[in-house]
Length: 471
Image (tube, rainbow, N blue to C red):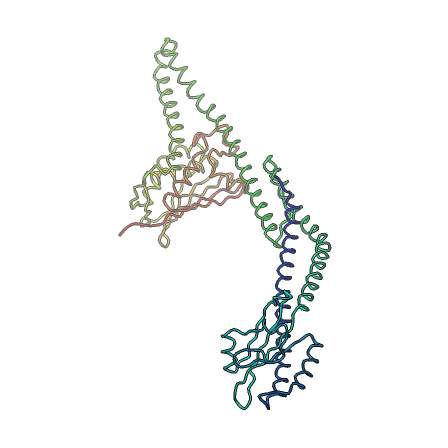
């Protein structure tokens, strides 16, 4: 059975109110009953002390004095009796004499000079009665005691009246509290409904939902957490969309990049097979097939290399490497490519600068970055700099190329990312994996890489690799 949250709130408020008043009624009734009983005991003790004070001069008190007290006390619905040491009633002998018999424990306490208080129920009237028994001592000798009784029916009527007033108060409180309880419950229910509606919109794919946050209570904190969740979902959705766009671009690039060499290889092979290529052109065709085959292998290896790095399937073999030697190798390997763009490769590093890294992977890092600089620099300069700092080696690769827009800087590390200028002609890192691989390899060396660029003024890559050589 489904119960609305509003009704649950109202029911809980009313239940708490009812339980609170019931507990209050019981506690208050018990307190009033005890208070009335104690007042009655104190009243009986006071009368008993007055009677004993007047008759304490004689072991045989005056019947006239006792009758006078009896008349006064009867008017207050109080009776008293005198009894001897054995507990037998000696004044007055009446119809209740046989009911008034103290237990041996009570007689023993009276013999010790103690006052005994008992709350009991009369056999004949089925009424609660308060009994107070006090020792009757004459000249330091116990001769008996005085027994005073008074019904406490008045307290019952008082408690009943109080309970009636409490019941009326509960009913009145119920009526008065229904409206504020309903308003408060409705307020909280509406806040929860807003979260429910927002959740439904998010589940339908709307990540623009935003709830008013609040530090007032847990629902407000829930709204803040919900907004944070939606923000993350929105960012994830944008990232997924971006990745999907890159994937589509990647598939387009793969189709284009692979189709061209495959078409070339297929054409040359068919020409050789059918004798359509002249003998003097065969060597050129075979060289072309070899170049295009190597290109295909490079394209495939670049993707496989990236996946191995991402899945941590490669092992670094770190060693102490002289940085000037590495820069010379980069110069030699990329000299022709730089010359085609009319670029100069400049090296600035001291002979005593070393880097602790995996040789092959370090070459791969520097080749990728330097190729990237050559690609986007015409008639300019690319500097390779190196220096040793405290417990690390710093490598800088700076160019005077076209630079990178500030909005694009962080995107260059993404897989498949390529700048627009390179989409039609990119012989170095065809799938845009180069810098992504660089980032992963530097992370494996526990290093960092930063890029600073300004549109039209060039780009600088700064690499920090910790010098962790074991002594």
